[in-house]
Length: 88
Image (tube, one colour):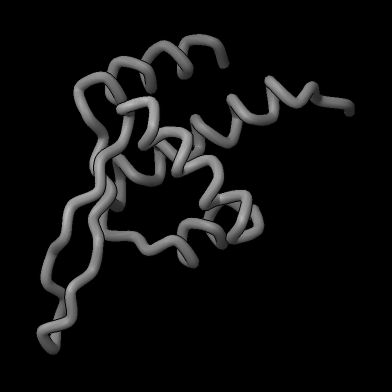
């Protein structure tokens, strides 16, 4: 079944928002695996959501004093996630 580029991007955004809402501490490689997308495509979609103010990035400490990132939905991101979910 053919899916338009806009529809495919919306699907990727919805999946990404869902995963981030459930697992904010996920890293990009795990996110890529979870979404079934290349790391580059995952980074592209994630960056677009950050640029639109739907996701923000925070540092947090992992074990062994390593610093990782947490991807958090902003209030705008939570609202947009609800709007996108209604479309499906």
